[in-house]
Length: 173
Image 1 (cartoon, rainbow, N blue to C red):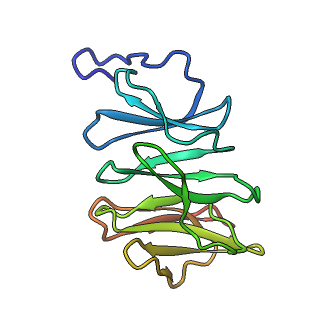
Image 2 (cartoon, rainbow, N blue to C red; image 1 turned 45 degrees about the vertical axis):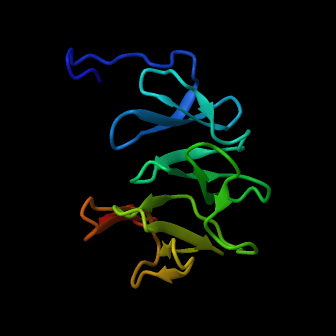
């Protein structure tokens, strides 16, 4: 929305985007394209379009890191199970946040406000829970009492986590 006119500006009329996120400074957009599933970024005026991933099949829900240097997203790559990946904001090879050989899947993630951790849902054999990945150590911690919780989000101050119970569809905090 244009803050001066309170009208929406069409930025990328031919994008065919399915998901979008904006940097905290409002300068850059990241979005996934319906046509080939790749992630792209552009300035908020639509200029400087850059492909971040070369045809990442099923790339969804891109999310800028708090510092704007990386993008977290969900994709359906080789094994066709949804997994979370991080790609540099300049583009490059996406890296899975779960270690190789992990049997489960993850569909939704969220950066901690300081960008040092990633909160995500993890599902394996019909059971799910919430986990936190520490970026520095690459260690993952299961959150207590998070069974069947998904689509979790951190509060802006990092003190609270909101999530949805996958069975009852109730929102919990």
